[in-house]
Image (cartoon, rainbow, N blue to C red; front, side, top):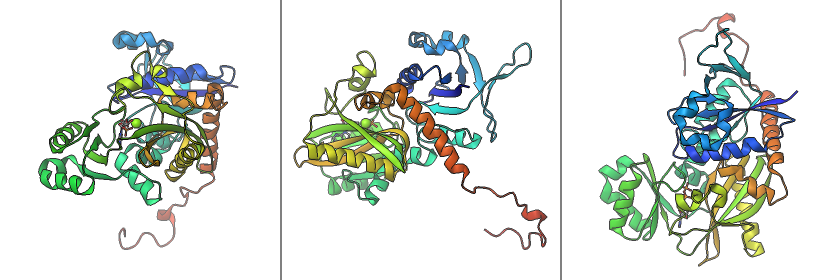
Length: 386
Ligand SMILES: Nc1ncnc2c1ncn2[C@@H]1O[C@H](COP(=O)(O)OP(=O)(O)O)[C@@H](O)[C@H]1O
Ligand SMILES: [Mg+2]
């Protein structure tokens, strides 16, 4: 019997389109003899749809027409109900479209890659590939991520963080803090977006103000970082779970501007066309350091499935820092695994197996009790103590 895999993609995210591309790549990679794939597209306003038409990228040029040909579906937030239901019942009253065995979220960005979607799946109890809610949330927020990594001795560049309220009400204090702790130049980022949105460099106070005003349009949490000017960027994918993981070959993305922009990353014929060098040309010790830090980042954040850790090398000092983790990386980083000898098909196989393994591991833990304290002798005395 084939395993029925729900591949979820799209979503209320600035990286919606990138997710559509990644998911289509992943769906095509599954071995059709072993898996039956149910594509589930989440529209920009958060509605779920399924249908074969979702598998042709050119159909997304006219989303309204595409969705008219698809079936709107939902899942109930009920533990153990793995059915995908049609919103509109068919003529014969049949409303179960499919019963999923496992979910593979191929969602990028805020609202979806940050653990919210994983929380839905955990509530339902459906096994799924990739990081759980905790690891996803920690990995998405650039501030929380840095705090955790730093606490575990993983090098991150110096930073100052603030809320948008801090920025509007205590501007002078915030500027003084940045200038005292970091100095210029700095990079300003919204804490929880991706694809370089809202990110920019500031070389003086005026630019800092401009950048923070801009970043505050995107997020309530803001981070200002020391800018590495002699910058080399290296990415490394990690696959597995906290108990057992492997690191991929390294890639070096090539940027055309001061920071790697949305355009550098995605324009010019899809993600695969982005300029990159695989494997990155690095001295052996630096390459080993990058892979070690990538693995450590995955481990310390308790990641699962396939992630991509982005590192920064300061060429002036040779020091390597962890910049960020993408817990659902673009194209699921398949090209880094292919280069390491693992086919995309085998990567998808591995992700499903890891999802089922986690389920088995978790089922061995006690998380609820069948005892009813109300039915026990003595009753519940003296009100509820907390
Ligand atoms: N501390 C830094 N110093 C220099 N350049 C940086 C620094 N942080 C980020 N950048 C540049 O900005 C880009 C986007 O930043 P990143 O933290 O990766 O955000 P995103 O989540 O949007 O990818 C990086 O790929 C890099 O080119
Ligand atoms: Mg990045």
